[in-house]
Image (cartoon, rainbow, N blue to C red; front, side, top):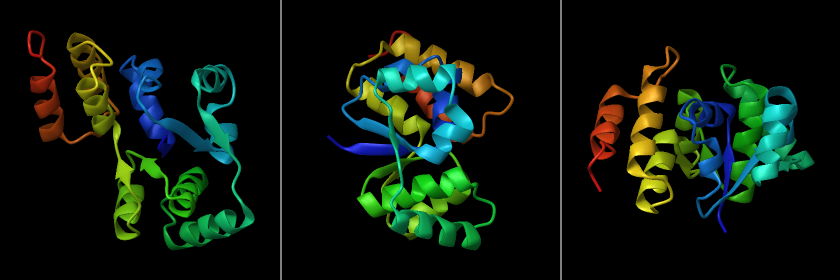
Amino acid sequence: MAVLVSDTSVLIDLERAALLDEMFLLPFEFAVPDLLYDRELAGELGDRLVGLGLRVEELTSAEVRRATVVNRQYSRLSAPDTFAFAIAESRKWGLLTGDGVLRELAVTQHVEMHGVLWLFDQLADGDHVPIERLHGGLSNLAGHPRCRLPASELRKRLARFSPGKK
């Protein structure tokens, strides 16, 4: 089963959409680096995610060195983001991110990368979640003041997931 390494932004977006648990219905394994987990997820949310199947991965020394190099080159990336990138690159896993700089890095380094809208598509395409729930979740996400998703892509998905469509 394919493994996808997530940054925090994707998990936050899914939580805002009330679809975080449903992510684990998809035919993937989900992982985060231990540093990201410790700094940003530890506690009730992290426990819940681990209970759902989230893997917390420790980096090898080579992966830590790679993350350090990436952090020096891309100072706008957080350490947890560079750890997520290093794991995905090293282990040939996919990367889930909403961070623009991290997305650009993944593209330049030929690391498979997806965002939260792709996860919505996966939930819809696999009939894992009723279309009405996807529409409601995406509407909640789109209405959040910190939503940074592209407006044109949001409109496309909202139309695709509009109630009454199949």
